[in-house]
Length: 301
Length: 287
Image 1 (spheres, chains in turn green, orange):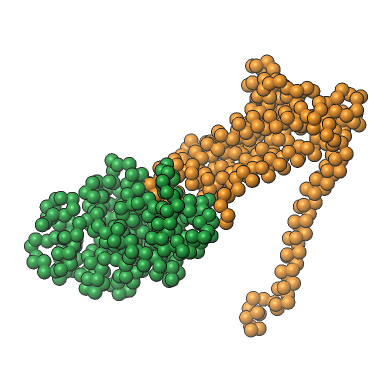
Image 2 (cartoon, rainbow over the protein chains, first blue to last red):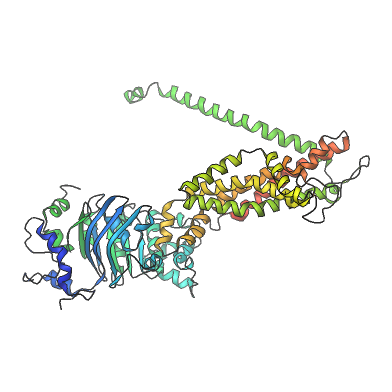
C-alpha cells in the first residue's frame, strides 16, 4: 500500500526527497525512508519503513529567528513507537527542529516558522492551542530542570497539578512514574525531599518521570545526556530503550555512538537542511551522502 | 617545585602572609560596619527597657504631669497603618513587577521602570503632601486611610522593582519546563516563576515594610496623630513614629522615657514582622 500516514498517495511526499537526492553526489539508492515507485525497492529498510506509520511528520518546515533561517525546509517522517535520533554539528538546527514539534520554538521572542507539522495527520503548527499540543508532545531538556520549590513527589505530579488536574491516586501515580524511570528504589524513602537534592542523572530521570506522568504520546529529548556522566548517560539510554515500546521518541544528540545505540532511525542535519535520513544501522554502516559519511567518521563537526 | 612557586612571584610564606593580611582587613571592616548597628541596638535596649512596663502596651497616654500611661493606641495604630499600606501597596506593586519582568521590554515598560526608579528617590514628606492634597483636603479630615495610602505609595516602587528583578533571576529553563508540560504561560508565571522567586520577593517586601513602619514625615499630615483610640479608618490615628517624635521634642522627662520605650517597641515590631514573613515563605520542602 503506497499510502503514508496522512493518507495521501505516497508520490506526493516524494518531491522533497528527490530534490534532496538529485542535489547530492549520485546516491546508490534513493532515499530509503521515502517510498519510491521508479526504483525497484529491494532494500528491506524501505519496506519496513513503508509499513511503519508516522506519528508525526514535518513538511517543508522552515524556522526563523528574526531574519535568519535556521531550518531550511525539512520534510521528515517520525515513525510511531520508534526512536528517531537527530544528529549534526552544533548550530545545524537540531534543537530548533524538535522545538517546532511541540510549539516551543515560538516561545523565544522573534521566532517563527512556516511549513507544516503534522501529529496523527493533523496540522498542529498553527490554528491550534500550543498548550494542547505540548500535553501530547512532551519534552525533556538538555539541563535537568526540576522545579526547585517542589519535592520529588510534587515534581512528578507537577504537570498534572499545574494543569488543574487532581489525580485520584497520586501516590501510585508517583510510584509508577518513578519506577518507569528506574528512580523509585533510589528515592522512595525521601519523596518529600527537594528535587534539587538529587544528583544530575537522577534529576534528569526525575524530569523524564515528570514528563511521563502527563501521559504524552511523543517525547522530545533535547540532548538529555549532555550534562550527565557516562554512568548516568547509560541509565538514561537504557530508559529510552524501555520507553520506546510505548512512546514515540525523538532525541537530539551530539554523540553519534549514542544515536547508534538508542535509535531506530537517524536524521542527519547540516546547516538547517536534512542531508540524510534512514534506518540507523544502515546510515552508520552505509551512509549514502558524502557529508554524512564525513560527519559520522569524525572528519568535521 | 621551587620554580613553580617562583613563577607566581614570592615564596609560599609571603603569600600566606598576604592572605592573612587581606583576610584580617576584611574581618576588621566587617566589625566596623557592625559597630553602629550594635551600639544603636544596645543604647536602645538599655534606655528603652527603663521606660517599658505592662502599662505601656495596654494604656492610653496620660496627660502631661501624670506619671505612667502607655502607647497602646500608637502600637495598634502603627499596625493598622502598615496593614493598610500592605493592602494598598503590595498587590499593585507585585503585579507591576510581573508585568515589567514578563512584558516590560517595550517603550511602555521602560517608562514604568524609569518612573518607579524616580519615585523611590522622592522624599517621603513629598508623598505625604501629595496624599494630603489628594485625600485629606477632599475628605476634610486626617485619617488612617490617608496615612496607609501615603505609606503604600512609598512602598510601591520598591515592591515593583524587587519583584521584577527577582523574577528575572529565575532561570528561564524553569519556565520552559513548565511550558513543555503543557502549562499555559500565565500559570507558569504564577505557579513556577513567582513561586520560585517568592522568598526573595517577600524579603524585598519586608524591607519596604520595615522602611515605611518607621516613616514619620508622611504621617504628620495624613494620619496626623491621636491621643485616644481611633474609632475608624476615617479618623486620625496615632502611630509609633509620630508619637516618638512628639514625645522626644517635648520638654518632659517622663515623655522622653516613653519615647525611648516606643523606639524599642518599633524596632521589635519591625523585627518580628521580618521573622514572621520569613517563616511564612520558607520553602515547604527540606533541601
